[in-house]
Length: 65
Image (tube, rainbow, N blue to C red; front, side, top):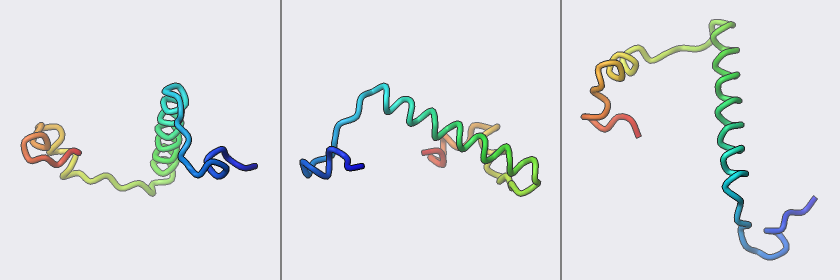
């Protein structure tokens, strides 16, 4: 299956609905991946990052981007 971009040589513009659904799908896949890793004890959380986030220090130091 060829996309329109390969025929015209330009990137095809995507609708806002498609972009929103794509964003949502990525978030759900990430959530499910983390959930699976938590259940199998294979997910490591950066406790220092969590502690700074809880204290709102990340905003001051520019750590969240």
